[in-house]
Image (tube, rainbow, N blue to C red; front, side, top):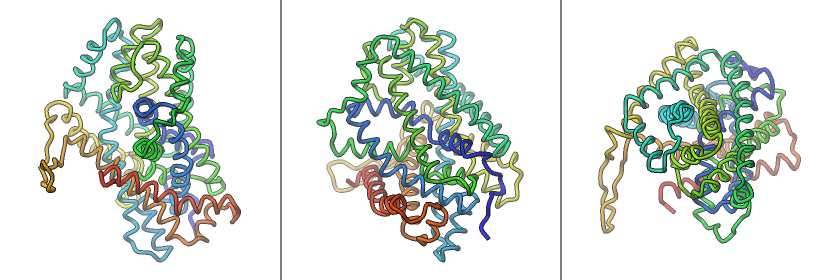
Length: 464
């Protein structure tokens, strides 16, 4: 008999799941990464391709991952082990769960450090640290932060403790209560910043840049970049969406809730661009500033504007909230596995996961200062010069998770649901019959999504 609920609990409502899953998806990728890669890749042309990729890859794979989670009702590792047995398949398919938990754990370790930067900037901005500074001065503040391992470690510690406090309280008392407050607050802050962007006089210029597509900018590299952003922004392939799906009521529609989550995540990313680009143009800055757009360019822009201290502080609070809702979902898969397989109390499991991720995060802290010199080796591939394989601890973990583990996890999810599970099992869990909606999704999951993910993966490892 199929389990109706997970041993860890269940969301109290469909809305709670939507808020939690959206919180997992909405993170630094939406508010930090999406605006700057949009700026680097031609604005509206990139946004158009990105939205198409969300529909053709992101949404189909998310439906598949939630389906697996609800059908298994366990941690990603145990879910994939159980479903492989149920479908008469090799236990090797449990690798999907292991890949997801490993990726989530590694991302948590360095995500906490980057989120610590945002936490630091809340207090720096509120204290007027950037007021009157030019770009070199603002850059000096940022470089002073990342070059100080003790300060980075302190902010990393504070943020990790914030995560442990939420996850230790369980599904309803911890995860659900946190996202019920954080997600509406996040959206409210974002709307305040959008209104502020409208008021500073360069809103039309920002909107033209963001939404007027220049099709001459669209090339293979832009398409692959958009495809990668669409995939990674939804937290797919890292076990977070699967474990959240395991807490979803059997009565909830997976397709409708997935569409709601994807729509909300995309809305936040677009609103972040709507809020940021008018501020950039109003300050006479360039929209293609790259990763420094948030931590260097925007603080300088806010410092020269009326009310800039207030709105700059609100922006970094927004960034912290987005990081927090994502990072608690990164911790949950490993905590659930410890509770299930080691008969550990949730509080102890949360502290253990947080502690190990904190220790691993020290490598990222030191990657920006004491251990900033790349480590690795040179490989002679017959070219003019040997190829260097390696980097800092942070860059190697970031590359391994973003470019290898997450795409492989998403690819295997699409293959497992689309090709290895019986069609009857898939239809039974979705509960939408065999009409056009099911057939369309099933075809895209089986044929379009795997090809798209494979292209992203091959491009990321420089094979195409």
